[in-house]
Image (cartoon, rainbow, N blue to C red; front, side):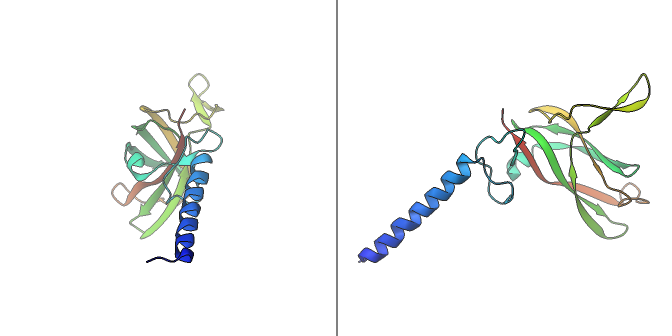
Length: 159
């Protein structure tokens, strides 16, 4: 038989869990703790972490080129994706690093053949998009098959 003190402890434990769940839900989750699934919709200014089942729906290919890593991805989620974290592994040097990929802030003007600033747009649901990151010399000298990449996390919002 439970005493009044034990019932009180159980009651307050339930209240604490409910309050925490409400705070996570009402604030759109917490991107600082990606192990928590997303709650809410997020926004372009404050995206939330997508859960692993959503991340698995972001597919495509990527390649290094002149100190940058470029991806062409398909967003098979109903989220607008604002950024992607990838892990690159250089098999040649047995090293691994994480990089933050964002949509490009410039595009090639075909008339002048120069890079010009462009508005950064998220990758919309069920569409293709390009993401890139400066990786410096991390994969310099690594040939095809001597490096791998994988999506570690993704952030976005629902409109």
